[in-house]
Length: 294
Image (cartoon, rainbow, N blue to C red; front, side, top):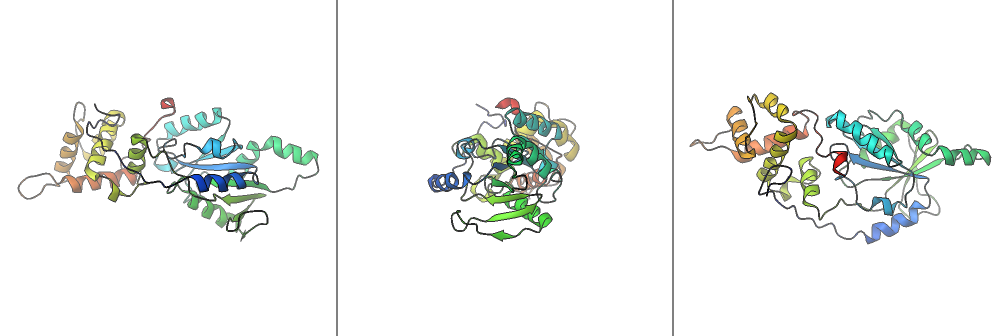
């Protein structure tokens, strides 16, 4: 049976995440030292790019969710995701952590998130107290880009602090805010095939561990269902209605001249090209999951 991406033979991406035990223990020690959490996700796959245990791990600390890479996500979908996280009690910002776009109001959003706590501090004469936040996110989602961007803005000083496990670093970013990098590695939901595919689409998983042609067929199946006009516009196709993913791939290969000697389609070459163009935003702004799915 075909999955939501339209490919009946969709591959199962196998994962070897190791153990979360050490990370959970270290985070449990450090979460007591912070006032809130900055969770970074990929705006194209806001749920698949999260750690499934993040709520429990962070002890339900107040949270601000950064929908990173919003510049290549469907803006209408991103707005719905912001509403979704807001309804869950978090603050949410659409941004691009590499360029800093969308992060100008970060400090203001943090203060809104922690307004009650800040009011208590002020009532006790502690209004100048620094706000301490832990930054969390799975690999390749943009956590380092965010910290680097905020450090550049705030001319951060990096130092180990007493009472924190040796090696954990605090970054002072200005605006009375200090960031603590996650003490360990958080992983996505490895046992979910759909999560694996979505992470592979965005390049969060190395292409070397997946079948690139099958992955491309999955993507074409999804796009022909939700963004057919993008395929037609980019590859000068009259229509993709009623076409199987393989037929679309062959039509694109023909348009781009990716045909081998003997007349066979160069499936590997067209697959690499299609995925590169999707990841590079050349197919337009595309989001691969919606809030109403959760």
